[in-house]
Amino acid sequence: MLILLAPFYAIFGSPIFLQFIGGAATWGAGIILWKITRLYFNQFIALCCVVAFYASPSNHFYGFRPELFYPLALFLLYYVCVTQNKLVYIILATLFLLSVKEDAPLYIPGYIYLLCRKKDYKATFIVATMAIATVLLNILIVQPYFVHKSGQQVADTLGFFNQWGANNHEIMLNLLSSPLKIISLFFDSNSGFWYTFGFWLFIPLLSPFLLLSAVLPLTLFAISNVMRMHVLSEYYAITPSALAYLGVICGLHTINCRVNKNLRRYLNIAVVFFFLIHNLLFVRFMDLMQIDYSQLSSDQEFALFTSAPMSRGRWQEFFPINSQDADDFNKLRQSLKDNYKNSRICPTSQVYPHLDYRDFPQLQPFGGENANQSNCVNVFAIIGDIWPIAPDSLNNQIMTMTQTQKCNRFGNFFYCDNLAK
Image 1: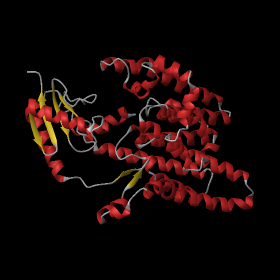
Image 2: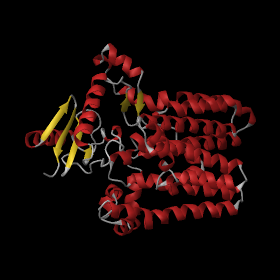
Image 3: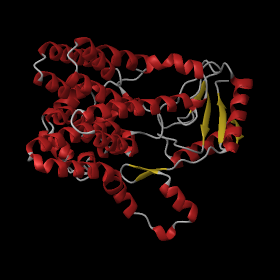
Image 4: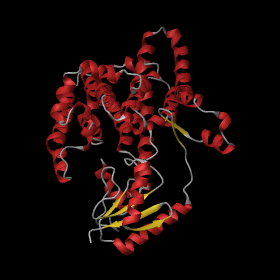
């Protein structure tokens, strides 16, 4: 998927372009969600559903992530499987979903169910084969190739599950022998399962499609030792939330079909109310209850109502760009171009997207929690998200580097020359 975006990124040469692409993907997902909702409900209900989708912070992210393509891909394949009989459309939509990330095949079982229900067994076989082929291609060829090229022993992603074993084989054996532990993690009090489906009153669970599409990825999230994955916070909530919207539409349609015709009008009113209040009552309510309003200044009160509530109590406020930081960064970038254009440049995560490979051919992001890479010009900032380096660790590393290396500071930005002499 990202390969297809590379030519556009080369033209614009700015990470701001990725923000535009992420917004376009979310917008497109809402369009397809409208068409799906219209299969079962009237236009007003469809509008309420799409507004709820756009307004919910669980369906988007404050930066660019490949996961932003998941809602569009999931909705598109669902719509094609339900409405289209032409095999080529199903194949293209499946290819689009499988190209988003390596975990995309985990969502395919629900779509196989939809095709089987239509008795389109040829499409079922092809979609299943494509999913299996993608898994084998990743495990046997793609992942080993890039692990070898990076000089690592195992893929970084195995670190998310290292409590289960040191390699693929150990992890799989321990998972297969511990079903009760997996179930307990899936339903523990911190599990993202409760947040994703509980606020929909578990109505999505009435959909067999949702159950089949969500069970494998949610299990993978639940057994991870990374808390953000386990609780489905930040961008990890994007895909489960998108599936929940499909599940709630299917679940409400199931209820609608089973009630008396005289009651359907009132049920539709309840559905509209349900969608409209979902974000305020179910998403924002828990966050709003935790705020001490007596301690807020007038500026903070304004920021509260112009911010988006991120899942699990996280808030994302939209601040203007600090012009001084922008000027300082431009000075740092120019200094690097003047003195280290052909040197190895190792920036931290918040700096890396803003440096261009055309200016620095040996540009590469640092790895691990050490900002002081050997034989590198290390570039870092003391603002923004410095993951995976802990703030205290970064401060200690900065003190060491400034005392032992040639360093230049530009406001909140630094670079230190640790090139081999």
